[in-house]
Image (cartoon, rainbow, N blue to C red):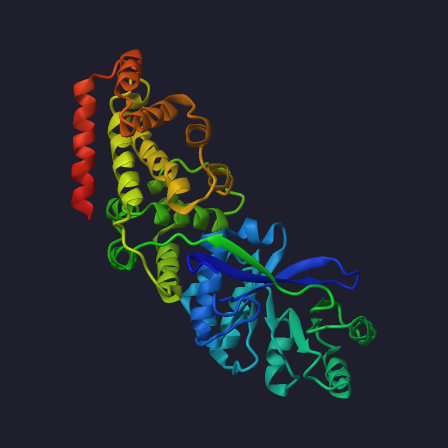
Length: 410
């Protein structure tokens, strides 16, 4: 298994009609692809959240269904919960979670925000009654570990509460039918489906870039400085766009620039994401990859060209849009991801989509021009420049400035 691949497990949760109604999202490591080898619970949860929001994207993993993520008490009480889109992500409290006033209050708050809550691998206890009474939505019972008589007694005690009971580790039809007769409404286990393993090429960013980003987010949150940090990393820019899509599903306004994406997500949410990403990281990669270098130069070059193009120079945001096109245009080469896959997962403006997919419009024209110059197809480049009325000397200045900018950010 390629260590540069992101992994996440996904097991369906079904109703009494054996229809999928949700998924449990599971941590997977390269050393154990079919089960969870977890040495650090918080790191495992952080990895699942980061993979869901900004490595895969919620729509790719869940479609129209809700996903549930296991959390311990520390994670539940952390700011990381604010990052989750509550209408799509629910949380399962681990079986060793101790009920405290702070935990109950946080559960109430999450519930009011639309989050569904579950108690995982549960056993009935008086200590949890405050959660049974209108806070928790689902109780999950391990039907392999819990004796049938004990299970039936606990189910009976929970009948007065507004809860759904979920039988997990249902491995046979007999177990499924027995649980149905007891009153279980939801089911999960190998009888229905084993957890599937989802894979996606890992997009690494320099740890130094992430810590630099966190430093600025923890300060005065200067958007210009934060935007510059994102410009250092094609991977980071792509993840930002996936993150915006995940936490702002249904957003009508198309993303136009990196700054626009940052303003949509907001500094607080961005800081939470960076903190989780740093915690989840198990390795890092610098920005000295030659293709990363090429992407940075191309983006800065296109930014300069946009200010020269007769159509684009009249539009205030065109240089920033051109920079984004330049960054995204080399992700295919850098991470072996097809461009239509990149574009389909992002809520990009029509101008940026057209430029990336078909070299359409003025942005597509300057992307085409940048590629010609990189391939040293200078005669073709000069012909194109004359057609749109951009002086050759000005293009050379743009290229010089792009190399200077790249050198200065290393």
